Length: 389
Image (cartoon, rainbow, N blue to C red):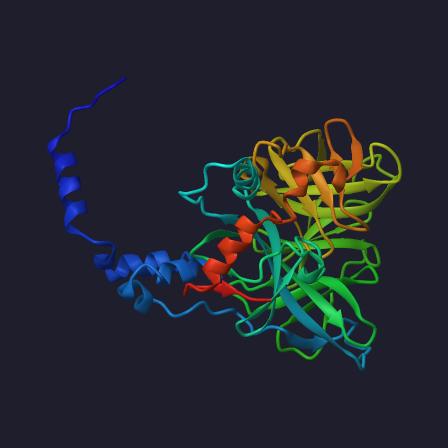
């Protein structure tokens, strides 16, 4: 074991820590911290520290108020009489704080082992301060998942935001489609979506959509995401491009080489890197590629290492397997459509979720009286932020 001498500077730092309280931080430093808070949960926690912190920044403000009526995505020369409803949902990792009294019985320890790693939950904001809890990363209401709690209080649960999902709902026919939302500080909020293979852009407040002019990939677009604060789209051949604020198309990856059997292309960001997932009609069923930026080409990767990938209808994202317990291994991909399926990149196996009991904990909170008592107790306690279905 190493030991270090306590210098005069160390004593000075310790003395400063003892003299200054969190509530006495300079206003300039609080502003720097506040400007780095990007989610509602971060702002809630910041404002809950003390009165001075609470008064230093206003409650979380969204760039736009949702749900929001927007025009039907069609070319500007063809006005559609129907409207679409823009909605936002957020995927969280909900993890109970450890209870100091949870020891003793086998049932308690089993529940604690399951619950301690938490689960995923998808929350849709219906209107101001009114939320609807959806089951896991699907779009199914929470009443279909009876173990979901009726309320989640941030004083009793650690809640981490994993991803945002935006959708256009069409009231006339009940359909939905994925849409990507951008709210860059240097530009007004805008949307991008794919309809019939066409790529459309709209600035919030406009009464029409703009068709992206790209003759190469027109009618062939398959997915769009927000990557490095820019819209990024891919076509059926793997050709990938970004669209800047002037709607100029810039190709960042050429089509995949010797890949003619794929029928789905999905873009996913993982630890700052851009990945392309290709679904195949036959084994190995799935291929994953990573973008080599300088070469502007896709290179196949055989492993996601510790990462777990989730592919949903309205958003896709990655998480670290270590954040969900020892039974969860990385290097796998979850599909939510047409049913929950797990694909293992190591052996190319494709199995339903119920055959992976360790992964099942991702989506279903533990059905136990211990959890129910915890939730009932937390719902009586005032907190900085409560989610209600």
